[in-house]
Image (tube, rainbow, N blue to C red):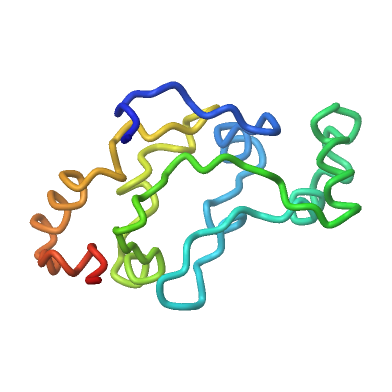
Length: 149
């Protein structure tokens, strides 16, 4: 069953504020979510070791950072709960969209102003994607996004 457009944010395993990381650390989306190198790849989550590059010094005594350091030490992935989730029958390629000048904010909104990320724009809804494809004159046939089985 699809979630409501303005559903409560997912409970995450660690507190994380995009707002703080953008405003104070001056990070950009690609600093933590590099562009995928292959067709069809999802944008992934950064490894705990990547976070520890800064957090080895910054806020290192904070309980959440200590937990992050423990995960990094044993090479454990941070079990983030995905906020943007597509149905299995939908195909989406971040790499292709970025290669065609789409910006992260086009679909994800102003994440850099959010402490807790939520899909306020409805970016995983077909009507959202269709509107953009019409505006940009992108391919809009069913099999552009829907897997042909």
